Length: 124
Image (tube, rainbow, N blue to C red; front, side, top):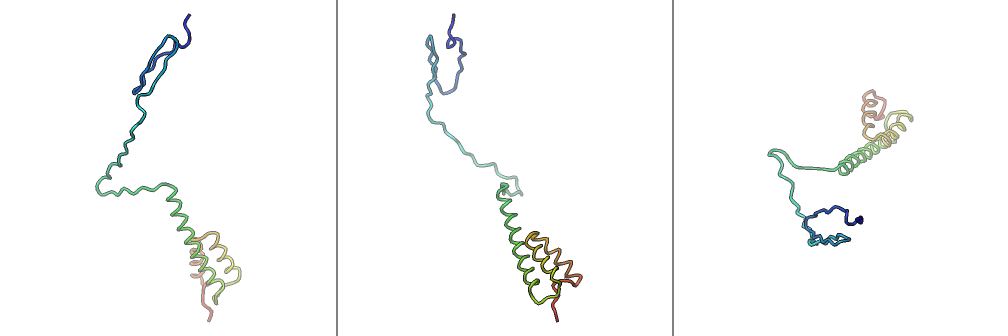
């Protein structure tokens, strides 16, 4: 009867030497270093730029622009809300809250109410 070591199939692995005995098979590596070759990406087709951004960079840019617009909207809302301008208390507080929570969409609110003459109209 044969032992399990004698029944095991032999596998050839490049860069190794195999020695067999009656009871076992051992594999010795002859190549201790592997070389890694880094190649640059292929050039872009003519007329096209090769600018790539991952999603983290895109998210950072979008969030940066969003917070910049929120800051600008809040400053405008505070100036028109607490300055010497026409508008009810509810409209002024609503504008400040909208600037904080909705950011750039505050400018739609501002534009509509200013067009109707209900907000940000200087007092005489």
